[in-house]
Amino acid sequence: MTITTVNQPSLAPPATSVGVVGWMRQNLFSTPLNGGLTLLAAALIYLLVVPFFQWAIWNADWIGSDQSACTSDGACWVFILARMELFIYGFFPTTEYWRVDLVFALLAVLIVPQFFERFPHKGWIGLFTLTGFPVAVYFLLVGGSFGLEPVESGKWGGLMLTLVLAFVGIVAALPIGILLALGRRSDMPVIRTICVCFIELWRGVPLISVLFMASVMLPLFLPEGVNFDKLLRALIGIVLFQSAYMAEVIRGGLQAIPKGQYEAARALGLGYWKSMSLIILPQALKLVIPGIVNTFIALFKDTTLVLIIGLLDILASVQSAIVDPAWGNVSTEGYLFAAFSFWIFCFSMSRYSQALEKKLETGYSR
Amino acid sequence: MTEAIEQVSTADDGLMIEMVDVHKWYGDFHVLRKIDLEVKKGERIVICGPSGSGKSTMIRCINRLEEHQRGRISIGGVELTGDLKNIERIRREVGMVFQHFNLFPHLTVLENLALAPIWVRKTPRAEAEEIAMSYLERVKIPEQAGKYPGQLSGGQQQRVAIARSLCMNPQIMLFDEPTSALDPEMIKEVLDVMVELAHDGMTMLCVTHEMGFAKTVANRVIFMDEGQIIEENEPEEFFTRPQHDRTKLFLSQILEH
Ligand SMILES: Nc1ncnc2c1ncn2[C@@H]1O[C@H](COP(=O)(O)OP(=O)(O)OP(=O)(O)O)[C@@H](O)[C@H]1O
Ligand SMILES: [Mg+2]
Image 1 (cartoon, each protein chain N blue to C red):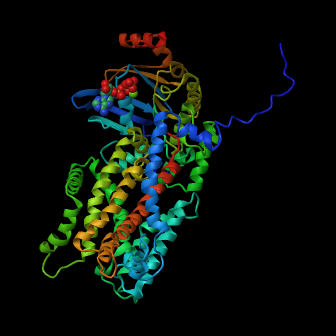
Image 2 (image 1 turned 180 degrees about the vertical axis):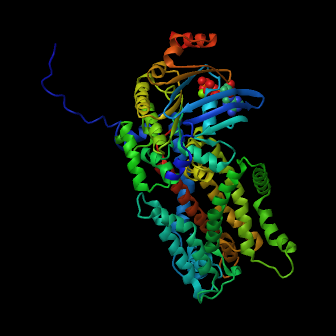
Image 3 (image 1 turned 90 degrees about the vertical axis):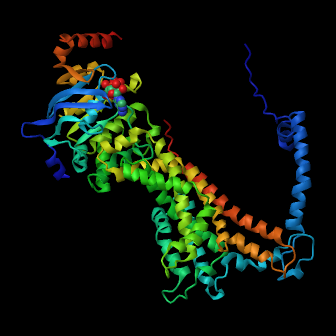
């Protein structure tokens, strides 16, 4: 029997297993194949990514007001900055920009609380964002009341138009989608048939044709003199189209809720609407958050299709600016900017949904 | 709150549940064949029988989770018809505990308990939560109030489910195999709660194969087979002198192991 009286000293690990070198050995060069792939990837990064950043950042022109400022062989961001007003406000009258700014500011103020774990009255703020806010936006942007100058929707454009289309689409498609999904699972054959027909009809046609129909065909069927706004028609088309998709996503969630949940709710004396809104939908919607956000993201990007009926969203306004002969060849910069704008919003939605999913996890799996 | 209780209470003859000539079919399959059953206030009935004999179906007809197609069911003198208002009124007075608990996983234990009193009985939230806490104490898990069902053991979940039903202050409690999804060491804690409930005078219908529970608690044991009530007797008589051959066979099978 041996008794150790002196503690073994704690030694530093061998240099080959820690630090940058150790990490590289374990992760990048663990096998010859891995090492080869690492070198290949490094070469690709060097050949593609480095030149891109050189073009986009190091060699780019940032300051100036017209084509003459773009002298280097890098990107001409001067063009984007100079035309920023067009990309954000479309053809909104310059004197009325503050109305759009106010809408953006309101939206930001309303959305920020949703990213915090605990924010006082978060639920009410959320509810206002979905109900009161759109009404306020309507009066602010459309004008014609409260002493605001009316701005016809033909002058709307750029980022502002994209956001209006996406926001209205999202806010309206979700509740309509929920109702359609519930209707499709209803016990009442008439309601079920109506919902099935509606969903299948809208899912079966491309959004482009919906938009064409809304802008070209609908006026033919309307009586003489009745003429409602092109933007409104496009919006209705987008909302109906998206709500059909939303309905199917939500139906998937409803189907995943065990029968026992419906029975327990009914056994407690909860009626249909209370069972649905308090018990079933909260669980079903949580299950399909990824699907819902996926639909939102698709919707956000699809809004750009309105350019085919002559509404200038952010992509279309970039396109119209590119062809301006006052600038050289700036199409790469323009399209990159448009893509980046879309990406920012879609990526935020995706991150938000992941955070939401994590927050709603209550550890129940059966 | 009082109004509903007045409407659904014992009928003049003291009957809480009255089933007369009740039949039910699933498609062509005749599940319930002429069920006649009378339950008085405060009676405790245990229902047993082989799998598929229609026990669940029968007690689920009492709160209309299943619809019967012939005959008459009255709860506290109110007949169960297609009338939705009527059905909801009866469900408020009839609590049900399921084999698989069916707690609402997205709500905490306290929220599970307070939900129906708040939304169905219109009890103010603070009061409903106070009542909920008192029932959680009765089932001996007040310290779990803030947890989610997924964080509790099976026995704890079933006790929460019992408390959830009790929060509605029901006149009748239905139990559908409340212990058969539980590990053996958790069965007792749930049965203890049920025994206590029986001592408090609750009218209970309980589908279970826990014969010890039947012997100590039940006023009557009902044996069902193939959709019929085959035999009905006091527990003492039922277990020592079963009349029907099928009852004897069933008892010998479940007492074997
Ligand atoms: N929704 C349904 N559709 C068709 N048949 C059904 C349905 N529910 C139950 N059944 C059938 O009715 C019969 C009675 O079912 P029930 O659930 O009442 O039996 P049980 O006595 O409770 O059995 P167990 O002890 O297994 O719970 C069974 O044969 C079952 O297959
Ligand atoms: Mg059963």
